Image (cartoon, rainbow, N blue to C red; front, side, top):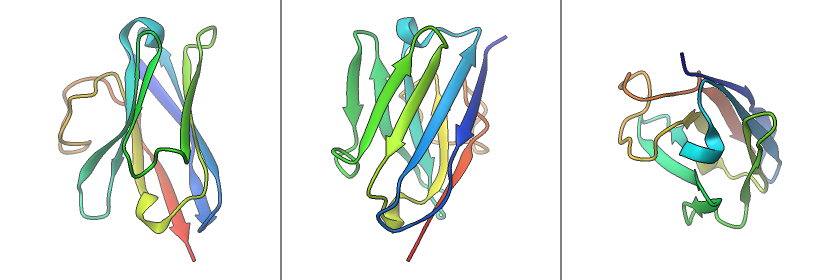
Amino acid sequence: AVQLVQSGGGSVQIGGSLKLSCTASGYNFDASGMAWYRRTAGNQCDLVSVFSRGPTLWYDPSVEGRFTVSHDGAKNTIYMQMNNLKPEDAGVYFCSGESYHIRCPPETTSGYWGQGTQVIVSA
C-alpha cells in the first residue's frame, strides 16, 4: 500500500522559514513525481509545487524564489524549504502523488496524499 508521511510545518513569524518533508513507501517519487498543495482557511486547494521525473520542478509564481523543492532518492523523501514566509502562505500543506487535484483532503479521497501539516505565519 502507498503511504505518504509528512513532517515539518509549524508556526513562524513573517519572513521566517520552515521545511516540510514527505516520505513515501510503496511509491517512487523519482519515477512518478509528486506535488505539494496548500489548503487555505477558505478551503481553497492551491497547487504550490510539482516535482516531475527528470527532475523537473514547477512552482506557483507566488512562491517561486522563496520555496525550494529537493529530494533524497535513497530515502524516497521530498522536501520543500519555505523561506521568507508571508501570511498568504499559511494553510495546511499536503504532499500528493498527483498534480491534477482541484480539491484537497478532506474534500477528496482520491489519489495519494500525506496526512497534511499546518503552517501558520503570524506578524
